[in-house]
Length: 198
Image (cartoon, rainbow, N blue to C red; front, side):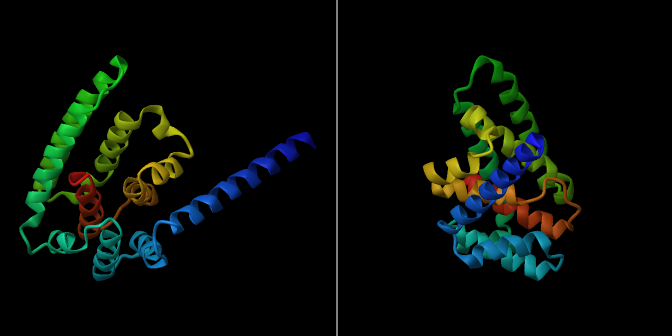
């Protein structure tokens, strides 16, 4: 009986936590942006994915600039990859870490180089999982163990709403996805745009 009570209590806590997170993001984003995130994850239609990505870009403060990047006929993507690379290298190098995390810094810099090579080769599906690995590691370097806590999304929204919205975006995406090159491209480039300008 006590075990059932414990599990019931945990179930209620998890449900309440989930509701709080949902309510919290609604304090920072309109319903159109939240729906665009859900549609982006679920859609397989390229035009709908692009439309959703543009709506989310607006929520991240990048609507006009991202339109050019989202268009595969434009040359803006190469500039984004360069800017993303340079800004992340600077961010990683300038982030003070414990001695035990110095090796992680070196690994992230190496993975960043490989990731950018894949993007320059237009290999978006293969770049999808490495992108999240890099983002997770960079956020860990910035925030330490706090980034691993269950309440980090709420913490990020409260201390820096712009970063918190980005983190919500990243955490709303599946870590492993078998999406088209076009959809993978949009999802990655939108996340990169934020980090390139953070």
